[in-house]
Amino acid sequence: MKRIQDIEKLQEEDLETVALGEDITIPAGLEDRIKAAIAAKETVKPKTVPVRWIPYAAFAVAAGLAAMVLIQHNGSGKLQDTFDDPYLAYAQVEATFQKISDKMALGVDMAAKAEQTAERPMEIINKIN
Image (cartoon, rainbow, N blue to C red):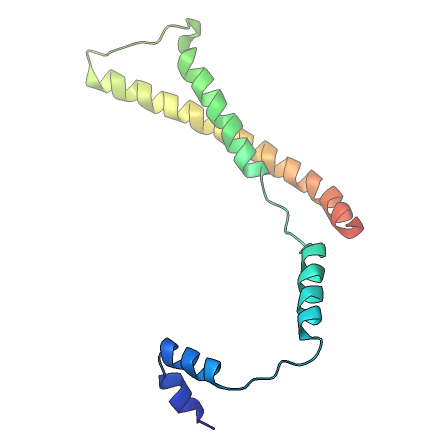
C-alpha cells in the first residue's frame, strides 16, 4: 500500500496503469444504487431563487421612454441635426440627459414599489412549491 504523498506525486497515466492492474471488486448492487441516485437527482428540482427582473424591466421601460423623448423632443417630431454654437449643443445634450435621468428615476421608483408588492405573492408561491 502506498502512502498518500506517493500517490499524489503520480501522473495520470501512472494512476490509470495502477488502477487497471489491480483486482478491484465492485460491491454488489452499486450500479443499481448509482442509477437510483441519478434518477432521484433528476426528479428533484433544486429550489431556485426568484430572479429580480423588475429593475431590468424598469431599465428597459426607461430606455424606451428615453428613445421616445429623443425622437419627439420639442413636440415637433423633427430632430435637430447640428448646432453652430458648441455651448448650445452641450446645453441641449445636458437637458436631454437630465430628462432621461428623470424618467429613469421615475421608472426605478415604480419598479421598487412593484417589487415590494410582488415579494409577498412570491413568498406564498415558493411555500406552495
